[in-house]
Image (tube, rainbow, N blue to C red; front, top):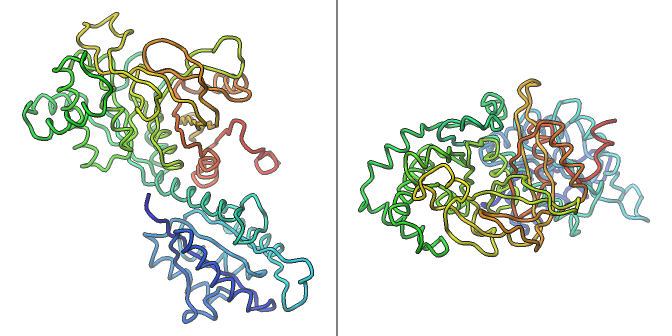
Length: 479
């Protein structure tokens, strides 16, 4: 992930100590650099001490932000003293930027409430947020209302905000691929392209027939095919039992997918796997999808476009690969455990043990030699985050549920890839999913950052999100 760039607004108010604002700007610029974050900020030659206090200052700040709009991921407002709420709000409004905004306030020290030292940022933050609300500007507050910029808590919140910015920027420009039509029995994965487009997410479709034609047009000796086959063979665990023709066809599929992803700048995709692939190509596409997911191209099966969206969101938030699973089985009598399963295209980085084989369920209705190149194994134990998004076409909105849990060392021996997920109040979650008509697929990631996803999607994307076992937000959402 590249370095983030924040637009920095250092606020000042004329009746408060100007030296606090001047020093605060210098310290915040240095702190951001130390944390590996670039900033776009007014200089002492632009305004007095490089801070924002007047309408003229706001105009200059807004122009600076507009001129650098392409690289600004978010805006950090810092209040070394009370700050001028009008100038700050006007700076953001006039810039025209719709990026996330974080409001930070410096704390006062007991015993330093003299006119020369008092900050009143505690009060000023309320005024800034009030003006943002009047202007319709969405903003983040942080869990600590006032906090020293030198504290570990602030650094944690700063990087949390940067992660939020990355998710919002990534999703608002995301391009999701869709290959093939929905498998007839799977009305489960229906969705609205128009609602996604309204959130800045475009869907690029590709015909499965076209895909098959492109695969068949590739020679076995094509350098790209040979290179892909070599990489695939090195990636997969023990392929000795996999027919050579299936491996070569899978490599060709990889070449076609890679060309398409690069040509159309696809960030994540979903593909029609069964049963069309078995009839047309005599393979399951799982192994190449696994490798692409580990290469940071999230790959969802069964044309589950919303699953691909969730996989990409989790990847943006946490930085690691994502995978798609079914909420599949109870695990004995434990109410807080359930079995996750897919047949499977799971990224190998998820597994504590794995082998390459065939889809034991598909063999029932297809020739044996058309069912190879799936992955089988057990998920490694560890903390995970999960997500599911869905378009609510009736109400014209996108909804979702997210949460955290833990993959345990329990085993659910069967074919495909399985793992036992443990989290508090699993029964409550299953009731929520069923009562609200959510799909049976969920995306999973071993870098759990669902707190980031909640802020990004609920606040800045405008989606309705349920955060299972997340922070109690009833004071904010329901008052």
